[in-house]
Picture 1 (cartoon, rainbow, N blue to C red):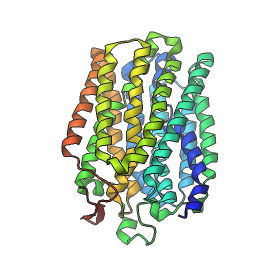
Picture 2: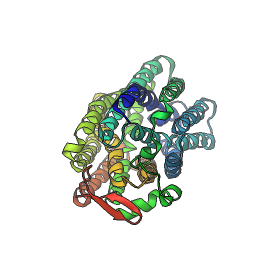
Picture 3: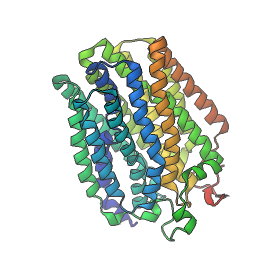
Amino acid sequence: MARAEAAKVKHPLDALNFFLADVRDGLGPYLAIYLLTEQKWDQASIGMVMSIAALAGIIAQTPAGALIDRSTAKRGLMIAAAIVVTLACLTLPFIARFEWVAATQAIAGAAGAIFAPAVAAVTLGIVGPKAFAKRIGRNEAFNHAGNATAATLAGISAYFFGPVVVFWLLAAMAIASIFATLSIPADAIDNHVARGLDGTTEPDADHRDKPSGFQVLLTCRPLLIFAASAVLFHFANAAMLPLVGQKLALVNNALGTTLMSVCIVAAQLVMVPVAIMVGRKADAWGRKPIFAAALAVLALRGALYPLADNPYWLVGVQLLDGVGAGIFGALFPLVVADLTRGTGHFNVSQGAIATAAGLGGALSAAAAGFIVVAAGYSAAFLFLAAIAAVALALFVVMMPEAGPHAGALRTGNAALPRVL
């Protein structure tokens, strides 16, 4: 795409990432606070519902990626998913049974699988591979800014109106995200480039008819190692914020949602400059040292939480989430794009790895919930820190560097960049 045409969609992409931030994850950690303080559920039941929702998203990830690769209506897919997530979450104040809550969150989790690969695909289709790293960093910065804004509004509103206010805030952000999506011209997206092709040739029959993300994943050793590291990252990371939110709610029930918002805002404000830095420096510094730093910070964060129950300490440690999650969010699509360039399977491969990573996140919530019931919050945090340390060791020892200047390596029928 010409630079002038790309410039026209710069601000619509910014708005999309900003407003979609609160929609793509549904209720997220607020679900745990709501179920604990309003429905009086125990931690194990809360963990099971969150795991069920995450597993539904996992199952949907690879089909969602394949659908995005094939579809020329990526904007329509995002709009439909935003509507489904919002309706599923808005029903929660009217139901209380475990089965119904689990069902609504499973639907939201499945629909939410569309957002991340669709935004990455639209971005790649607009700016092309050369500008992708910098634009992904900008996407993540606006995404985190949107999360911080939504969490601030949720925290202030919940103080006056209670935890239920987060449901209406989600609906408002969803409506705004739909208008932002429609502001991106359909013809600004090159659908061949958006699926990882060079935009000059039609995909061959194998690429068009057999988009197999798992085949690419299993036949490319660096991509497989990265997927394993992503699984362990999410296993260690996913349960930490909900556990912190529960601890804060138990200390002060009336301020549980507000304190959770403070945690989210603190981390998201750190993520904004981290994401911009990753986008600007990933090509120069390399992917490996940046992701290794994210794993090291995650292990440190888990080890620090048990040292005190003071809300100021917990919120302060939560700032480290901004470093780890900020790096992962900006780096993930870059590594996948590096290792699938020329295959036509960029989005389905994103889905395949996100499926594996999501499995780690889903198991995290359930495992942490049972550990809390059996041994307490400190034991759960230290367990998650140990998982992050294992992930760091695996990644440093086994993962080679992947970068935009790697040569081509044929793996099966897919032309994958050679890692050095």
